[in-house]
Length: 304
Image (tube, rainbow, N blue to C red; front, side, top):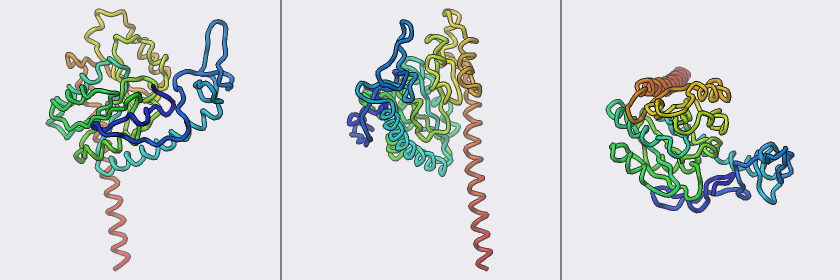
């Protein structure tokens, strides 16, 4: 069951092997929100709101201040792992994208098509997250892409530590792209930095246009929203414009692309976005190398 730490300690596995993840404090529920900071919830009219306190959550027997401290400790540790991942990827000029969504958004189908279409352009590797199965990893491997499976057990998201180990095994090619397909969940993955360059949230038109305001943290932290399964729009009562408005209500800077992983509609724009991000990553690396070279020349000059 997902908690504040969210990892399902003792159950996560990388390619079938145990993943020992050290946590501080207890595990506590993540999604419920609690007003008043008393950890017990409060009623407003006929509603119960457990998310208005400083911890934005509720756990029986824990105060709001204790919950906040536990969450800060867990996230600070995760951030250190994520920073190491980011530096490792940056030194190799690798673009890393964290794909997040709810279950059933079509994320794996979208990723499979993307990997197949772009395989000839640059090296692509995949870190695949799932609670129990290897099904999606096998689909990605069938495309020829190097893929490492992470099973999280009861945990409902990947974390920086897991992804660091996966990168060690994957050894993605320099100057390529790594896709990290997170566990299907619009709540917990929003809080855990994996060292990625950007979060890409995939939302399908079969899910309801109000998902961005129902799960605002995810859309607030995403750089791009891929609105998937647009080929089904003629058959659905889905307000596309309202959905995009909701997304920009919680994140005015979010970019939006409409795609269909089934037909390929909109994928040219998706690939253009990807290429732009990859170019930016390589330009950053080139600038860093030029700076290092200049420093070396200066040092050599000083030494005669």
